[in-house]
Length: 585
Image 1 (spheres, rainbow, N blue to C red):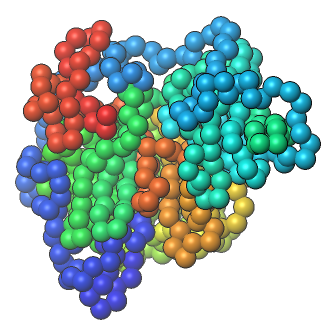
Image 2 (image 1 turned 180 degrees about the vertical axis):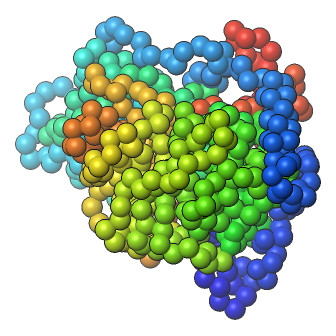
Image 3 (image 1 turned 135 degrees about the vertical axis):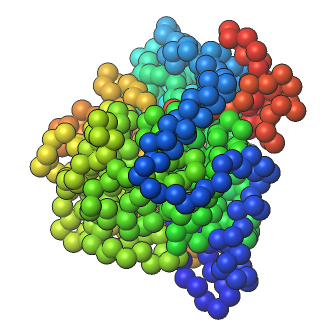
């Protein structure tokens, strides 16, 4: 962030909006957030004395326990029909058995399959698959997947074939309105269901043929993988479009086709950095210039703030939601998560940023830059920076002294995040500053194997300076092709097929991408990543960053739409009975 006259950017990671106003307006503007944050709770007195620390923790813990008990935490995980089932149900595995599905997309003739009979004409060029890249792996409940195709000249109709262990799916579609000099073919829910079933948790052979007035053209081949189990959980991310900014959220598995606004900022109160508790009950959101930002903790179900604001740029909740570890970009502070009151429990060496608390509660990993003085308005830090961990001692309710697990050789190591096993840590590495570094790339390492070098995500990183930033694991493990995988997301300035040409743009638009991490390949020191796919719930016109995951999206129980926060509606539960608020439908 740079100030120039009266213009400045008040976001937590990259440029949010430029406006002619005084910088104080941004830091003082938290009351201007939508939707109507009227639930401000206990006022922060700034008390930090150790003799009241235990009382503060116990009080907040009791308040959280009471809220969690009444916020319908047994609400079900949704299905792709938009009707909810019990959260205690296991995630859906892809149905087994043979499948043979033909899907004719609107605009294609009903006799489309008959138009691809006969021999191919060698003089008709094969289509180019621009997106997705061959070898991409997706979850079976991904909605909004598209195939972006280019050529041949005069194409009238496409045939996309998907052949896997359990059968085949054929999709017939016209080009429709050209996009970016090519054609975009949607994979609808019917086709996606067949594709997931045909894959059988493994790889499909994909063929694409075209039909022109001269006949059937040559075939293009590729592969597509589909994992075994529906992905679950929720994603909260920061988005900026024109003069608007917000924290958006998307809940997997309930038939949502788009994200919904969780907290909306404006030109005078710009939201940015945010963090979630593992169970999704609490969300910390920073507002204004990150020098440090004015941060508040929200109850996710009601979207109400739970206490006074506290200064923080980066935050992580303990797994039990009893403590919050924050950083102003240079040093760490342990706090109560609602009032944000500072409490003891850190070692004397508190220098560090980008903390993340492991799911099992035993460790915190963070970046330890050499520079120890935060620069107001600058959320990032320059190299060199190590990765450190601290062990949490529940008996003494304090952290032990930090240990360096990755020593910098001059580069910047930052944005670390624990996987569900509390062992693998994904992180960024660059030669420059941590805020939107053009050469940022994705790496991972195991914290349990000291001295083991990190492994680079060569395939997911791609080539060139793509600003691959803010990597985050999804909270659950999946399986693909007989082996375990983790999903991970990140923001990037790469092209999105035919729809977004970032490579030639003066101001690239950051988008959210997702890929699979093949655990066994990582353990063997091989490239563990697959080609990433674009997340369809985001806007291609907006700049999207910081996709933070949670195990589930916590929402209110309800009897009618008026019981729900703005933008949500009341939806009946199937097996649990009752109703639950849902957004983005």
